[in-house]
Image (cartoon, rainbow, N blue to C red):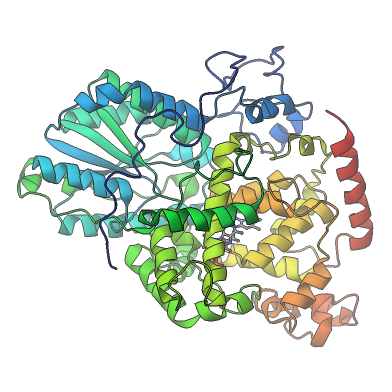
Length: 604
Ligand SMILES: Cc1cc2nc3c(=O)[nH]c(=O)nc-3n(C[C@H](O)[C@H](O)[C@H](O)COP(=O)(O)OP(=O)(O)OC[C@H]3O[C@@H](n4cnc5c(N)ncnc54)[C@H](O)[C@@H]3O)c2cc1C
C-alpha cells in the first residue's frame, strides 16, 4: 500500500463552529438540552410530546426505553429541519470551539493516546497518524486504547457476528501495533455513561495529555465526544478528533440553494467535483512509527493485556464460530487482499454482475468498511488507480460504478449528520411516521426465518442467517417485501438486520431501509412496489441462488423455482416442507398503497 503524506491536519476538527457546514441554530426555542431524558414522563411541551403512535414502537422493540426517550413527534423532527434544534454535530462543533484555547495550551506529557473505535487499522487512519506524529515529535510513546462497551452494543443492536469479527480484528491490530512497540490496552466498561470518566482515569494513570480519535457520526457518539471534549478541557487534557470514515466528510457538499442534498445523483456529482478540487482527500495517512524503547519499560504492563471474549449476550456459539469465522477472515491485511483480488478479477465486470446474487460480482468488503479494517479512501484510490483514465468518473464502467457505490456509504453518513432524527427511529420524511403499520408476529417470524413461500425472499433471509451477510439486491427485495407486502413496520426489519449483519452500519442500513420502504431520503416512490416474482425472474433467472439457500426446492426444475405452488411444482415443494405464500402479492400491493396514502395524508 503506498502512503502519501496527507496535507497536515486538513482533516482535523479544528473547533471552528460550522466547520461541518452547519452554523449555530437560528432560533433555539427550547432548553439547552435537546434530548428528553429517557425517564421523563410524558411532557406537555409541544416539542417533547411523543408521536401519537409511540406505544407501538416501544412495544415492538423499536425504541429501546432503557436508553432512549419516547418516539419524538413529527414537529420535533421538523424543528431539526428548520434549524430550531441543535444537531449533534453542532453540539460537537461548539464544544470544540469553546475549548480551543484550552486545548492549545495543553503540553504533551508522558504519552499520547489513540482511542480506537470502528477504525481497527494501522494504515491510512487519520487520527492514529496524527497521534503518532505528535508522540514522535515529543519523543514519547503512543498508546492504543479500545473500550468494550456492552451497553453500546445493546443500545446499537450490534450483531454477535459483527462483535466477533471486531474482536478478531482487534487481536490482529494488537499484534501489528506490538511490532511497533505500541501497546493496545483493551478494557470493558459495563455502563456506557462511565466511558468518558474511565478514559480520563486512564489518561491520568498513564500521565498522557492528548487523546486522538476518529469521529463517528451517530447521535450518541457525537454527543459523547462533545461532552468528553469539555470534560477533558476542564482537567487540562486535550481531545483531538478527526474526520476519517468518509472520503468527503459530511458538511461541505451543498446544493445551489445552500441546503444539504437530499437526492443522491446531484450529491454524487458534487462529491466527484469536490474530490477533484481537493485531491488531498484521497491522500493516505502515514502509519504510526515505532515507539521509543522506553515504551516497553514504562508501559510494559499494557502489552500483556488480553482481548476479552464478547459480552455473554452477544457471543457466538461454538458451532457458529466454526461455521462463520472461516468465511470472514479478520484484520486489515485480509481487507487489502480482498480489495486487490476484487480489483484484479471482478471490478471490470461489476456493472454487469453486481445485481446477480448467485455470482461473486460484488467485493464483499462491507464488513471491512464497517469495522474500519479498510478505509474508504484506500478503496476508492485503489480502484481509481486501476482505471485507465486515472479518474473517478469516465473510463472503465465497472470501476466507475463501484466507486459510485462506495459513495453511497458517504451519502448516508451525510444524511445522518444533517437529519439526525433518522438516528432516533424517525423516518426522513416525518409524515411517514403516520402510516399504520402491522405488527403481525406470525408474518414477521415467517420473514425472519425464511418461510414466506416466496423463494427469492426466503433464500435471501437464509443467506443472512447462514453467513451474516446478504447481497444488496436481495436486501432491497426483502426490505420491500416486509414493508409493502407484509405492511410490517420497516423499523422491525431495520432492527433485525442490525442484529444479524456482520457489516451492520447504522447509516447504510437505515438508508437502505428508507429507500426500500419509501420512507427515507431519495427513496423509490411508495407506489413503486417490487413484485417479488418479477425480481426473482430478473435477478436469479436460473434459480441458482434460490437452490443454494433453499434446499427444499433444489430439485424443482425451470421457472417453477420462482413460484413452486403456482407453477406446477406443488408436489415437490410440499414434499420438501416448503410453505405456501403467506400473502397474495396483488392484494397486498393494494393494501400497502391505501395504507401509505392514508398515513401520509392524515396530517399529523
Ligand atoms: C435494506 C438494506 C440494508 C442495508 N444495510 C447495510 C448495512 O448495514 N451495512 C452496509 O455496509 N451496507 C448496507 N446496505 C448496503 C449494501 O447492501 C451493502 O453495502 C452491500 O451489499 C455490501 O456488499 P459488498 O461489500 O459486496 O458491496 P459492493 O457492491 O462491492 O459495494 C462496495 C461498497 O460500497 C458500499 N455500498 C454499496 N452499496 C451501498 C448502498 N446501497 N448503501 C450504502 N453503501 C453501499 C458498501 O460499503 C460496499 O461494501 C444495505 C442495503 C439495503 C437495501
